[in-house]
Image 1 (cartoon, helix red, strand yellow):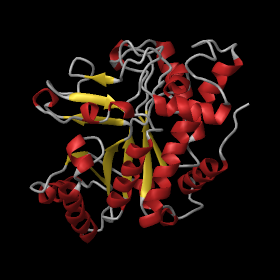
Image 2 (tube, one colour):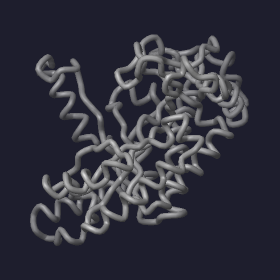
Image 3 (spheres, rainbow, N blue to C red):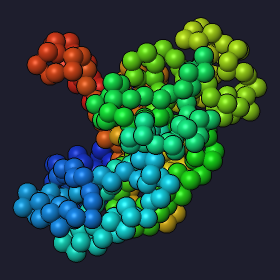
Image 4 (cartoon, one colour):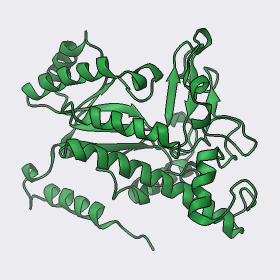
Length: 321
């Protein structure tokens, strides 16, 4: 039996009422009517973004100057925050809305091979690890968005010193007056090649948190990947709850300083095993964020290569969402 979240069902009902003409469209929030496109953001291109939005009738402007996902701006966000403030003023002046992309549990240090200080060099204990203590650190061979020489790390949400600073950055971003914060990739690292079956993370922060929650040692008290093992199922539930709690804390900090600012989560797992393995199950997230965007597909990477059954599964997933 499918259990629908009441908050989500009410939103769906409102949309249906609009479609059949029983409820004025003006009674719905702005984000039901977004026509958006992404823009890299810097101090020099704000006016160009505004002009593009007006010329192409964009409504709800997505921008990207990723404060949390770049090590330099994570430590020193002042310049990027000022750019956001200037953008927000100009966007609101034309009666539009803006939301900004930030990374969730990923952080890149550009040209790390030439630098003395990088995220991993400074904070190796904050990084996710597999059961053999291998750190979740990657380079340009692992993903298209990682440039040559960059260091890409995936962070444990239980690394409290990092999390405290992350939430401070979230509050600072919300305080610019931005209309939404778009949180990408809030996942446990199990989707890069060689990490699919790790069920990470087994870093010290995460292992300690699991011990406090269950009394179990994540490194020795269950058989990895064995769903017949009740202790492993506790590990699965713990990881799912951790992602939900992380997004809930982001939303709390957003609303604390800017009650009208949306928390938007981008999630790519569908209705299958990936949602459990990555720890981002949308059925658990509706209540803690305002909007979920889906980077979701089935079958082959290219649509032209997908089989009929792939499209059937895709429709099932979309209708489930």
